[in-house]
Length: 116
Image 1: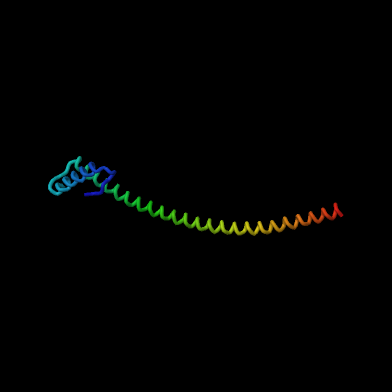
Image 2: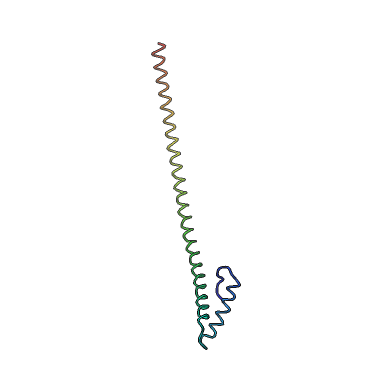
């Protein structure tokens, strides 16, 4: 019995039964064109099943690979966020000092020029 193809159990059961009947008489007598087509159909359904299994395995490998790449990008993104945050806090600290110095200078100039 082969694999269930197209999720059609009735068709699969009929095809298995029919192909077994035909194969049992292959050595004993000649088979008709219709019987040959049935065997070809059976071979094709087996091929479809094997290809389905292979494709699903390959898609799983590709999906796993993409998950690995996503994990790597997430780690890189996390590191970059941490670096930008550290750099931003350094810039903020320097900027605060510069603003403070500039305000002090302007206040000193204002006091010197206008008050005295």
